[in-house]
Image (cartoon, rainbow, N blue to C red; front, top):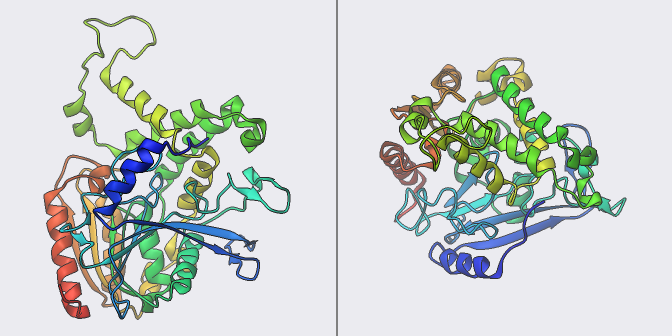
Length: 395
């Protein structure tokens, strides 16, 4: 269960948000505007919560859509209202940053199925008066993007200067380009793939089973019972977090160093620093994330296969596109390896799309897209500047 905002954290977050002109917003869509899901269910009513940064220009041509990853949310560049930690992409979004909020109007929505204000399994089903739990319909990456398109329609924004995101966020970017090619001027999918691999599905299944094995999960009805499958969700987070890092990074940071002791205990407390680190990651995650949302969103990633919807040929997803692409991968990312990005690049080349590709040499693993990687930041700055000039955006 998500911890509620603490007044002192909310106040500090508001002050920090002023520096990037951050605004928290929600849009509710009524019964007459249902979200038609791939599962053939119509979700209504539903709400999308999102953050904006910067200012929209007169002709609405400076919109950057930031799509978040699995455990992210809309707080990309402002402190999180629950944890008080800086926004997950504060090094990327802000005044003078690659996504310059003095120049661009940034929109970062929380995805459908999420747990930070956008409708998901922890919300109340108006037909029953109880939390959805497992009665919430299954969602896909395409559903997430369809909801975002409805949001932009509501805001009167016809097209996007740039869609950008890493990991699951990159999947959303690719889906945007396939489903709404005329609405995306430029796209930056980072550390992602056009479909989820069997290995990644397997890791997700381990996490889901950890949650469902927790007796406090109560078959997904834990909110009704006043319980919380915190232990299961923490283990899911621990298992997933390992995949976000590289062996080199783990060894450099922790090695086989002991945690607050000079010798092993011959027991099952956290003897090693890496054990203590993973336990911390798990315990803090449960304060801000919902267990059922974790089930639904990991499933959405598992279902993603862009080629499948286009006759099994990935290039068909991008046929006729005018979008400018910058595809980026990292040498040490074994969760979404460079080969996944190259498949996207090859598909774009097959339809003569405007695409550049950069593989960043780093030992930081999949999470490199969230970190201070100078080559990544410089590359994105250069690409956005070139796209802005083509778009006619002035500084």
